Image (cartoon, rainbow, N blue to C red; front, side, top):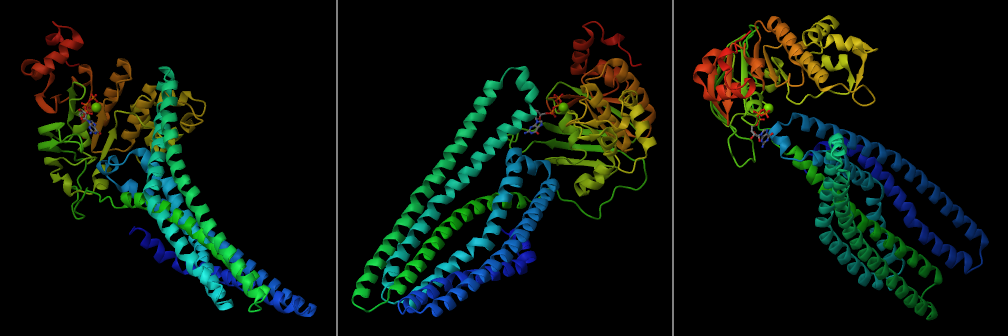
Length: 582
Ligand code: GTP
Ligand code: MG
């Protein structure tokens, strides 16, 4: 819970202001029963109307005073808790952004969302409550105890029995409750996960008519959430009435004991009324305290989950002094004995002993069957992941020493799964480089063969994508994604199978313009089709995480069995030797 310190340090002054007002409010509440007992015992018993009016006036003033204090603490408490919640959410979001892929993958996405929304709200509510009722309840409880004892020592014996019993009940409640609240939170994660999956795959769900299946899945998690929540409410259903019952027994005892003493003329009626009043205040304070504990338990479970994210140490380290050489364009990449395994995948390496050099300005094609590790290989270059062993150098600098942000400044990547953001086309292209001029953007779009279809839209570059905007075809998206990378003017350009949805004619056009653009830029081009990489300076053939051949098309046809097999599967058995680079 270390992360809370920062906010405590920042907000404690206003917090104390709120607590101050709560104290005034509690004081007003505490004075009421005593004044009332005076009215009864003096004013009513002695039939003194002036006294009743005078004390009534005082009571009214104290109530007004309490109301003002209550409004003030409401204002302050809302302000502090809202600020606290907003800051916590912002910090958590920033932390999530700073985490490496490996760190993030340790959490389920759904659970990250719940942490950012529901968990933060829980903690925020608790902080709010802390300033509103939580401080007031103990104050009222202890204050009422003191006032009650001062009022009448004999009746206070009842409290001696009632208070410890209630204390034990509250403690028990706390002990049993914690694990259950944690379960509720986990179940809510489950609900969020199913919704997220459903929404992101809604087309597939509908296409396969799997709606019932999804509905079942949702129903299951929903019921699970219900069951866990019921378990918690059951707990409350047992404990709250027990507390109520205990205190009510206490009140009956006070009435009985009091009436007996009044009959003996050892006590006045007003004392009994005031004492019962104090006991009711104690009762409500105790109920609030047990509610406080429940909220505390819930907030603690949430805070623990938030803390887990904050405690993720970013494993990616770097040396602030390390810089890439200033001369541009650079773009040499060296893989030296690189092996790599994803975390949690039973340590099974997906890349084994990779040795590869890409010279500045070279176009390197990467080909291999699906799952052979092509995407994994290129994801190591921008440090999405760190290699498990071996060394990767960019322009001679070991990338483990480089700040990923600096490294990624020089790299543009077109990922295998096209991702565009909601916003206009122009905004999406600006992502590549926020300083790009309109001309540069249009130039990049032209090279990626996207300009013509963009200007075909009525709103051209101002066309909105995503929610409430147009939906692009797969190939159109790929072309925008390529244009976005070109806008960046990188030293290293990585294209991960990004022409798969394009027809061969468009692909050829893009390749032609890339040739012009890419003079001086190191290009890593992953492709499924041999024709996409045939004319590269060199082609890397991957198989099951290993490089099984490096060379030009002709060389590989002579020397690499896997390459020949891929060729044969794409061109037919007898063709390989006739297929020549354009
Ligand atoms: P295609 O894109 O289908 O042509 O395959 P690829 O050659 O790009 O393969 P990729 O590098 O994506 O995957 C290589 C191996 O790594 C496969 O066995 C995957 O199951 C595994 N893999 C890929 N991504 C992840 C990941 O994010 N986490 C884990 N644990 N394994 C992954
Ligand atoms: Mg891939």
